Amino acid sequence: MEKGKILNSNQLKLIAILAMTVDHIAWAAYSGYPTEILPLVMHIIGRLTCPIMCYFIAEGYHYTKNINKYTARLFAFSIVSHFAYIFFSESFVDAKSFIPFYYGDFLNQTSVMWSLAWGLVMLRVADSKKIKMPVKVLAIILICVVTLPSDWSCIAALCIMAIGTNRGNFKKQMTWMMFYVCLYVVVYFFAIDAVYGVLQLGVALSIPVLSMYNGKRGSNPKINKFMKWFFYIYYPLHLVIIGFSKQYFNSL
Image (cartoon, rainbow, N blue to C red):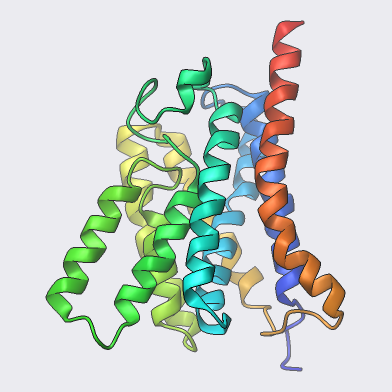
């Protein structure tokens, strides 16, 4: 084993799940954009999740036996996750909240899974030998527009493309990822909240974590199969549980 490469994909996905859970508990427990130390630390921990998810969707693109089924699975997952995400979010009012743009602002109208699913499509387009460059550019722009209202906006999709098209060059993967994240930081800083804009730079903490990836799934086939489906179940389920918990405590 290469020195320092001590984490397999299952372990990295668990890190992403734990970080995500901490982040979402913070969003539920502290409304708005609090500046107390505890929620800030919890949200910084949460910045580990998205880049790890992006990385393994890009890896999945190279490893999957059926790219069409993989793409369809991500989109189906994004639809299920939409309802869980809206129920969990601060913008939830009633059943009409599930209708995009009915309530709330333009941003955060659906979960990051929408951007991740389109990110796989973006990677497929960018990596295609059959699609001409002008068509690629147009398709990437259109995907950015379509993913703009989701959590993490089009940044998650762009990160998947950057990681997938630069596979084998970790430094280049991370450089492009941080470039897109910095664009997100600027928009967040001026359009949403300055403190939480800077906080997005916590994504950089994922770089040393991802650098420890050894390129393997794990030694136990049963655990590998379980982990393949675990996140698909855990993501919407934990949002619904936190959403119900938040409503219960708010009613006391």
